[in-house]
Length: 193
Image 1 (cartoon, rainbow, N blue to C red):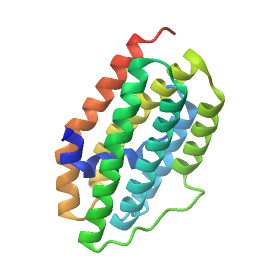
Image 2 (image 1 turned 180 degrees about the vertical axis):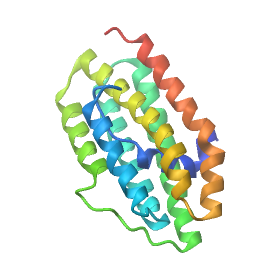
Image 3 (image 1 turned 30 degrees about the vertical axis):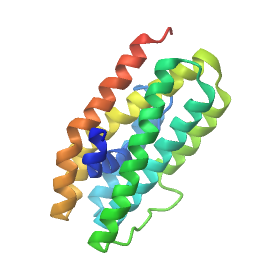
């Protein structure tokens, strides 16, 4: 069983709080998307909203990685995308199971939420990019996405999470998310820019 399947909740939370930038760490989308997350936490982000964002964000990373599986011909990009689909599907399901167990009804933030807007833009860009440019765009997106998630969870998500079980799982899975980031960076290094 992949390590992320054993410890799903933080991956859900991490994915939820990441932007979906496509152009890398200097992406304006990444910078812009962090502000609404901080504002939501400051305004009282609650566990039902966090659970809803978990589900959506995992679905979004599954979608971007499925595009990579369809479009990329690079073995390493495809391997990484396959891992993202597998792990995020497992985590999404475990998040749904946890929500049921805790009797938490997810409360989505709405389609004007920055993460949703960023995801739509990322999907549009990925669908129109081809070849090596696609491989670079996808991996740059994933590296930025995972870094943003790690940053957001430590400064925003953990402080906002009220449920002790949810928080404990978030803390337990954090090292695996760091491993995803490291794997993405390795693929990124292997690509010809």
